[in-house]
Length: 100
Image (cartoon, rainbow, N blue to C red; front, side):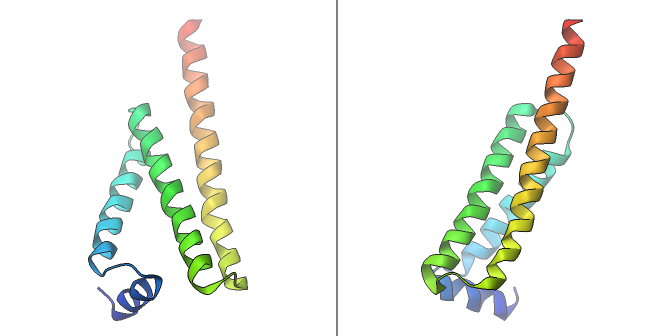
């Protein structure tokens, strides 16, 4: 682990072991979203990613107050919402295709 990451997480009030824990969960979530099929697991992966992003935003605001560089957090939120919406459109198209 990079010392900057440990310093940053300690500054937010999280222990050092949380870095590897959340990192592994993010990788598993990305894999779950990328693998075709398994819609229920994908839902949980999207929910976990959203909780992680909003928790990170809240932690930064609660600790340091709002700062302009935090606006860059909008990018992953928008990408996540777009991916989630597209996932549901694909799911809906598949169910309509099966009904025909």
